[in-house]
Amino acid sequence: MESSKARKIIGHGTWYDKMAFKIVEREKRLGRDLDLIRVECGVGASGIPHLGSIAEVARNYAVSLALKDQGYNSELIVFSDNMDGLRKVPAGMPESLEKHLGEPVTSVPDPFGCHGSFGEHMVDLLLDALDKLNIEYKFMSAIEAYKGGLLNGEIRQILMNAEQVGKIVYEETGQEKYLHVLPYFPVCASCGKIYTTKAYKFLPKENKVLYVCEGMEVKGKWIKGCGYEGEADYTRGEGKLAWKAGEFAARWKALKIKFEAYGKDLLTSVKVNDRVSREILGYEPPLHARYELFLDKSGKKISKSAGNIITPQLWLKYGSPQSLLLLMLKRFVGTRSISIMDVPRYMNELDELEDIYFGKIELKDEAEKIKLKGLYEYCWLLKPPSKPRIHVPYNVLTYLVKVAPKGREVDFIIKKLREYGYIRDLSDNIEDLERRVQYAQNWVNDFKEISETRVELRLEEANAIRYLIQRIRAEEEAEKIQGAIFEAARQNGLEPKEFFRKLYMILLGAPSGPRLGPYIVAMGRENVIEALESALATLEG
View 1 (cartoon, rainbow, N blue to C red):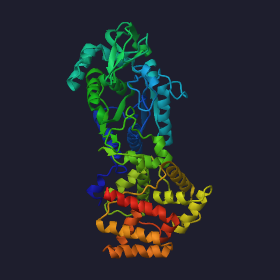
View 2 (spheres, one colour):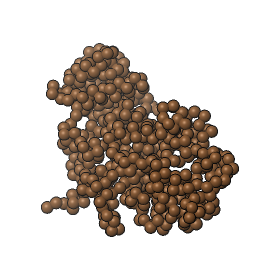
View 3 (cartoon, rainbow, N blue to C red):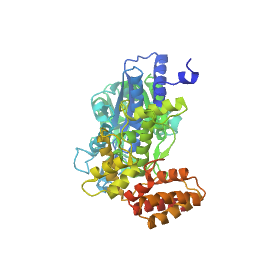
View 4 (tube, one colour):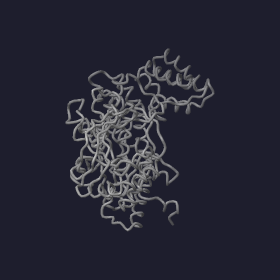
């Protein structure tokens, strides 16, 4: 008889499967049709897309995939907020953009000169990253949505009930602004700015909003208006809803969105839009899930404007698409500090998941095994390979790249990997391995250092490593170095097996590997000494 614990496992046993099930059950209770379950993700176009931007899309897409896996038609809408104004010159961008503050990002010139506008450039970078990750989506542009009339009915309802919307905003956020102005930003017909306009009257018969371009404080900086007084026709896309006061809600209703995850920094905006959706538009808002944000290693939020971003394109220079998806999908809640130096760890972790998936690593906890196998499948967007690939710890590859003869690196590395036993069958497909070698080459070329895994050392282990460093300097023969490792362990009261495991973690980033004596000689004794000294420096620091 099936255990109660097993019966609770839904789909692939991950958070995404559970959320998909929850969405379906909720939609059934609401009596809404399940012909197409749309998941939405709003993305900005005001700066270079970073890992946080892509993670938001990836997580929403995983939910959409889970819905499909459970037998429902689902699609992911990637809605680009490309009508938003430029609020701040992002770090690293030319100061010439300063004069374009307040203008819609698709009206701002592209400082790189390769796209029609700043906004187009940023959207293209985002879509390029999604395509590299093989994420399937339906792209929607805010400019096209407004000009094409997609949101006309919702805009009208919101403007007709602007006073009530203003009260909702005030009750949820304490902000009084929308008690006095309409929740709509016309684009000034004179200066082209969007955030400098104040909409003060709605003319429902004419489908127009009256406004004055008087200026606005954005990000602590006053953006001056031109003083122009005019009218904007909302049915022609001459302005946009304030996203904090109804734009999300308008999109949800118009597109019949059933799920959208959001970052914790948007909590109050989502609360406002949920109420606008229910109380003004008469649409039960989508089910939400709130996720934490990525932080850099100093603990600061990763931000386009702050300039502390890691782009997906940079990650994919050193690691596979699946390693990046693992970073994004392995945990939904809880903040995480990330750095480009994390790439080797996630490449190795993906290999470990693959070993669990194909039964090379056995787990006693059945539920945990199902969940980790499910995570692996989502890293492959539910299209996992039919057999395991050749696994080589990232550190091994970076060492080999460092000592390989120039011009024939791949042949040298493959030969060494055969010697070490990583490649056992001549029929093994080495295509994936060649890609890994390229990642390692990029890593060594750019960082000029070997990325050793940070491990905690006890005093006895540190002393054993100090002794081993002396012996490696004195010995040239592989077998003598192998023997020195045993001596270092015994002299410091350590179990040789555990000491070997610690050395493997430092040098390879994995708990096991080839015989260390020959490996140390092949990698170059000075390279290995450098890695061991770095591990000691971490302890002493």
